[in-house]
Amino acid sequence: MDGIPPRSGIRERLGLRPIINVSGTMTALGASIAVPEAIAATTAILPEFVEINDLHRLASRTIARLTGAEAGFVTASCAAGITLAVAACMTGADLARIERLPNPAGMRARVPIMLGHMVGYGAPVEQAIRLAGATVVPFGQATSVKPYQLEAVLDDQTACALYVVSHHCVGYGQLPLDEFAAICRSRNVPVVVDAASEYDLRGFLAAGADLVCYSAHKFLGGPTAGIVAGRKDLVRATFLQNMGIGRGMKVGKESILGTIAALEAWERRDHAAVRRIEQAALDLWRERLAGIAGLVATIEPDPTHNPLDRLKVSIDPAPANITAWELADRLGAGSPPVIVRDHEVEHGYFYLDPCNLHPGEASVVAERIVAEMATARARPAANHEPASARRQRRSARLLAWPD
Ligand SMILES: *Cc1c(COP(=O)(O)O)cnc(C)c1O
Image 1 (tube, rainbow, N blue to C red):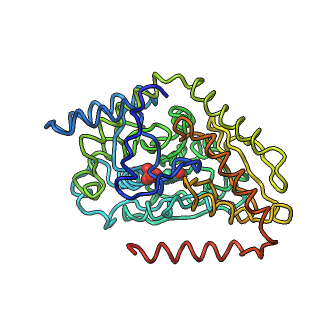
Image 2: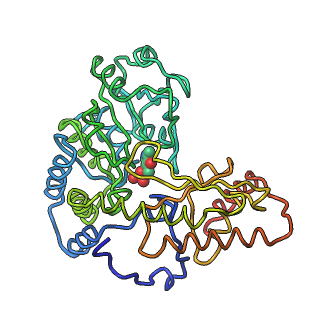
């Protein structure tokens, strides 16, 4: 992309590993490459005083223009946005209620969610609901939901219903959003959508959502922040949570303006050109990895229909003399470290995600994989460690932080 500042070497100076991210927009890796417009905006506003609610007004207008919503609000993260959106549906614009949370006494506080949507994104989505003081009401079966099951859980104590759009969700058997929203609307229950990673800024509101929550730091390339867009009365009530539980989830001026800048850059971006760059990386990988014993590479579309393909790399451990998870670990441990998308690696595959590459990195990734496969083939037949041992090692490492 044009306008990306030259690499500063800051990671090397700090003693942090200079990782290449082919995993996706992961919080654990720093989310995304911020767009130059967001970097410039955050730098410009940081030394200045502003009346923060006026800056929030500007953000609301920009969010409204891009999403088609009546209003919008910027908070700390999409996860914070979910909590504050639920809180808004509980309190309305009643400041006494806002101060009383997370004690829900006297408020509607039940929040239904389909069982197949009860996912984690590094933290459980249902905890984002409970943080507001609400009670999670799971319904349906994990892989099958019927309209009558939603109708049966909506009652006069229901604050709102949560709908999650994510590759983490069960991918079939769920109620589609328009049907879900129509049932909720007929009972006067607002629908909150978690669309953290979805490029579509308009479709969920158009399908009947009352509030939609996005991440600013994922596909938008903004600073760390969350966006809540939707009905003006509910967005206002979300904003007013800043006087209550939202205080601990606040954004500063730099995140508000950085989010505005990222949205405006998204509006102007040549999305087809970005797609061509990503396609070139996929083509390069597929060609370079063709014909390696025990490795099959195929291009797959994004499971939630974002305009983004990924390369699926499947490893047959017998001819390859390495498992998919050992290969992922070796790529992550080598030089430079390459972090792959490994959510499903116990099935023998991982993905390469092309949406976070700096110029020149795609070929480095291909050469690192070719080299690791050659090393594995040249060694004596290996005894493969089960995927569960890798998982245990990784959780032990997490629990040992800061060591
Ligand atoms: C990333 C993600 C979140 C959390 O977003 P943050 O802005 O990092 O808090 C929530 N829901 C889904 C589906 C996600 O993918």
